[in-house]
Image 1: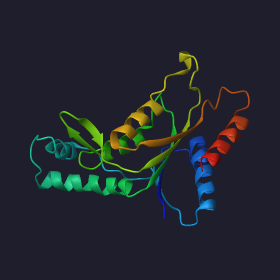
Image 2: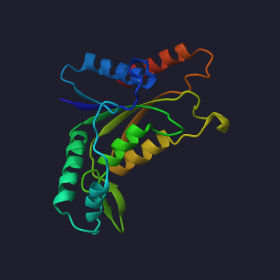
Image 3: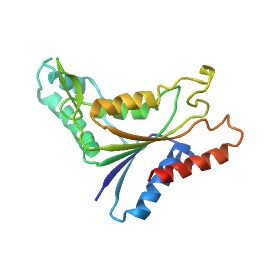
Length: 205
């Protein structure tokens, strides 16, 4: 049985184009794999813990800064609970709209909570950072209103997929498959373009 964690980074519900792509992919997978287990994490509905002073202090203790006292341990346990849900998945499905050239802040919040030493990455002075995840795959569905790869810079920059690709590498997700619907506003036939993107999402399954 394959366990899929679907991380929805859009607040737009059924109107979300990135979510339409992800759902087309997942629906196709369901038709082909009866035993597929899908856990959906809607970041706009999830009550994520704040990465506050105690959690930061707990993190730094892994680098030899301070000690893990009771307050920090309690804070760290909250981080571990959220991160274990991520680690338990075999496959990740992200749908991510572009916000101001990058990812929505709810997704950044989630990434900041789970990207922790000893959980998703390790560090050695000579080796540097290295990922702790193994044999994971991510399917990422990107949308944006104006930016598209290769477009003139007046339409924006891509700190969107560039950031995610860096992060996947950091935590050890070596296989990343991307499907894009970009742009969704400036094209002459946006509905047709979305339809083609949905077909690409189905094909990715």
